[in-house]
Length: 373
Figure 1 (cartoon, helix red, strand yellow):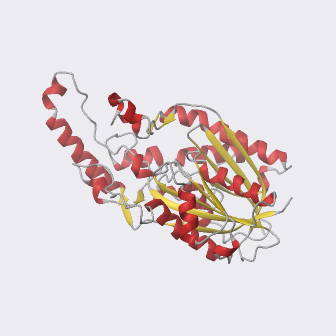
Figure 2 (cartoon, rainbow, N blue to C red):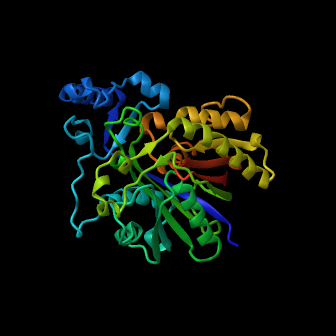
Figure 3 (cartoon, rainbow, N blue to C red):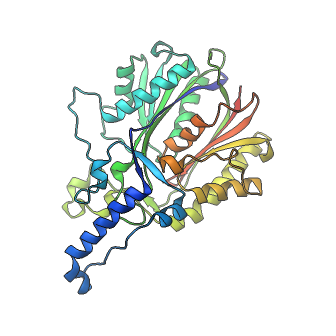
């Protein structure tokens, strides 16, 4: 079995940012227009009036202050309330591919690698813009990588599941190195007309190079000590959009064809599951929690992350122990924990242990224990 390392990471951040203040201003203007346009139906009890949002509500509920997006104008247009991203011709690289190229190129540079050193591409993300051909094969072609590529989706846990898949391929000798990328346009499946969720998501793309330790040449390497995955079926986070929607006209455009969740149930269910899984994972390697100096957790909700860290540490975490990026990026699904890892790794001394952990719809949880080389 080959010893495996993460030798490089990459991050593509979209050029547009929307602050809570901008988002609330747009949402409340939409609410005012909706309630005015439907005043008679609301008075008759046929339609429920919409409730305005606020920056205080958003920050208290999530810890989010802003988000990066691939398109801003369509989202804050009260007559549209969704991104404006034109389709591209089949002769152009897709938008997910374009994001993956940028994050992937950075990861290759940090790893000191070129396309010739990579034997496979995994695109792991929550939402793929088409069924086939695989976006991973498109990315492979765009970067000039020989070998294989495939797509995978485990919602917000896609990146950690993708790291395990990449590590397995390298450990078993099926590949020298794998490029794993997470292009997430979460705003594409977001209901910007729903007060309870209109603020949650942002867009980004992350990338990770996983390769044999004996070949690695980069200055920043992390040994993959072990991975642990868990799934448990739940309807509390769901998106029913799919190719069969067109076969039932009654469901076209329904709210469940976008992201929907029962947030309080998710919080109650997921936090103890994540803390328990990380604890069990550390025990399998005889590692006390006190040995873990950094937790790069899924960036969905600040309250969730603080509770998970508190359950593990037995106290409130210090800022450097569980770094936060969701205040700036919001929830970027599978990319979130990797953004945190990408931004908060350089300061760690050799030998430092850490855990990359993601969790989300499924339910799904992925834990990756790493040691700074």
